[in-house]
Length: 228
Image (cartoon, rainbow, N blue to C red; front, side, top):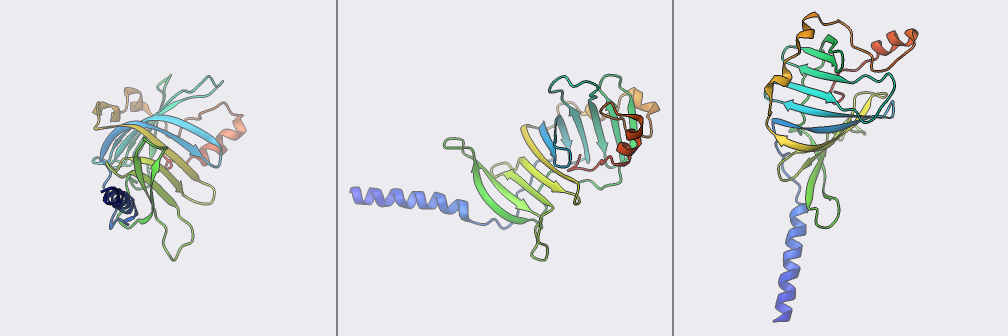
C-alpha cells in the first residue's frame, strides 16, 4: 500500500514537472486593453522612469503619465499621449500643461508576443508559494547572434511582465510592468487637453540645461516604444 502511494506521488510530481517542460507551439495572446504601472530603465543614461500607463492596442494608442518619486530640482514631469493611427504624439508638461505636438514616425509596437517569436524558457517568479509562472520569448533567429527584443509574459493570462528592447548599439531599454487591470476605466485620457490646440512643434526638456545643450538633447530625443 505504501509502495503504491509513493509511486502515485512520484508520477504526479513527474507529470507537473513535465507540463512545464513542454515547448509551446505558439505564443499566448496578450490582452488588448489594460491599465497599469511600469518602470523603464534606460541603459545609456542609467535612469529609471516610473509611469502610470493606459494601453489600448485595439485603437493603437497609449497614454503614459510620469510619476514623481522625489524632489529633483528643475525636473519636469510629462504626460505622453501616443495616437499611432493619427501619427501624432502629444507631450504635456504636468504643471504648466504646456503642450508639444510631434510626429510619430515609427509604427505601432504592441505589448505582445509576435507569432514568429522564439521560445526561450518557462519558469516561476519568486519563491515557494508565489506560483507565478511565466514564459520568455525573443526575436532571436539562427542566422542572427543576438536578440533585439526579449519579452516575459505570464503563462495564465499572458500579461506582460518584463521586456528588454534594443533599437541600436546605443539605445536599449528594460521595462517592468505591474499592477495591471484589464480595460480602460476612462477613455478620455487619450484626449489631449485644450492647451494642445496651440501646441509647440518641439518636445519639452525634462531638466534645466545650459542653452548650448538644449539643441543637442532635442536632436537626440527618441519617441519610439519600447522606447516609449
